[in-house]
Image (cartoon, rainbow, N blue to C red; front, side):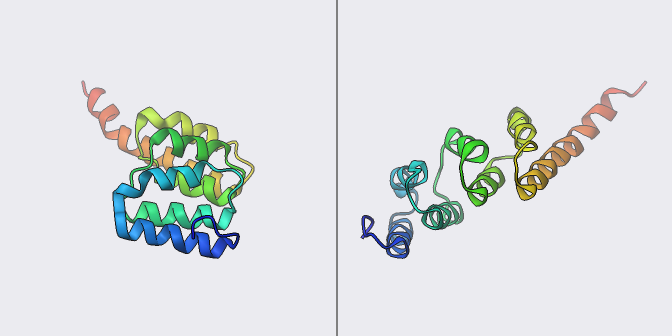
Length: 128
């Protein structure tokens, strides 16, 4: 069913695989997400289901999707899925340049959160 010509059938098939095998479906999920020829709706469905099911998607894959994917929805979801980590600040900074205002706003929200969480440490270090 995962090779069915109908995108809705393929999306349901991978959802079923994720539901049945959970984290063990990571390889199938990654394969679909990396397939630029796959229907965007299928990839969005797979990414959503994988994220809500705890399927581990490698950070490199999420970063690549957040910055370079053709689908605005995929870029947005991938950016949201990345941890808010100072080491990944560069990803949010690059995403500020995205053509989509939705991706820009998400990137700015991440940067604001990083700045907010760093602020108490900065203030603590500035005490006389």
